[in-house]
Image (cartoon, rainbow, N blue to C red; front, top):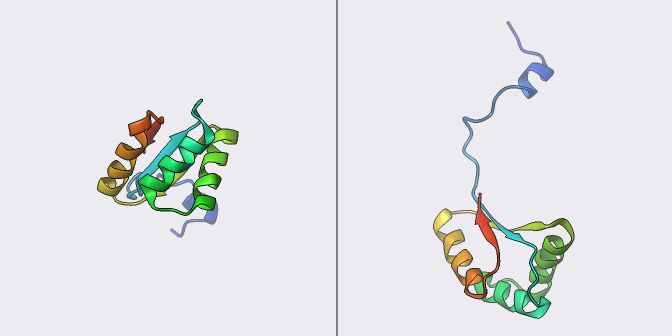
Length: 89
């Protein structure tokens, strides 16, 4: 029996491997401190870091980076040097 599009869309996709993401949450840190720490942790340019910080500020959280867990953990450790709130999902 051939599946319809709606049946295919509703299938459980837990068998797929999701790429880990490092999430930054909004906090009461000074704007410039967050930007400097994001640059230090990621190597991104100022504009990219400001975009991440702005999304975290307005939406409550922002994806800093997706990829290998070990790289995300390294970045997270640098962000936590100034007690930024992060999680790897």
